[in-house]
Image (tube, rainbow, N blue to C red; front, side, top):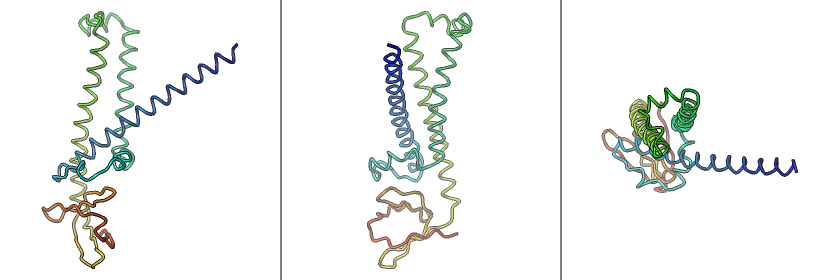
Amino acid sequence: MKEGIIKDAYELVIKEVQTIISISYIAAVGIGMLFNYQKYILFGINIFDYADVFDFLISPFSDVKILSFTVISILLALLVAYLDIKWKKKFPEAYSRFNLGWDEKSWFTTMRVVSTAILIVLYLIIASGFYGKISREEVMDQPLTRIRFSDDEIKSGKMIGKTKDVVFLLSGDKVEAIPITSLVKEIEIRQ
């Protein structure tokens, strides 16, 4: 009898962990898309026109800053929810006063979840804006990159980034989207 209870509890925990991992990965991909959009839009590039699904599936893991923001955001959301629950259990009177007695209303739980979600989305939008500005400064400070095509034509500029099929190059004030399949022979980063 005990073995059946333990097995059922184990299976329940495994299912919950799988759900949490799946939701976290979907959130990470969404956050990666938002951060990549902010990075490229400052150069006038709509990354959604050039990237495919696979570029976004790895985007949260392609940049340490995006990965850091993703992990911090998910942990921050969980921490806020945990602290809110603990505060309500430990100090119910102070919690009720702080919430103007609304915690006794039937709609309060829904409002709390929705407002927390809105705050997290606003945080991510603001953070991605900062990430975009930092990325732009990093691009402007980097050395020139030379791209040599198979016909020995050479283009120089600062590499903004790349997708699976396109390299983005800033040459002066002009942004170029160079398809990788356009017989690029070599990409050289000048120090």
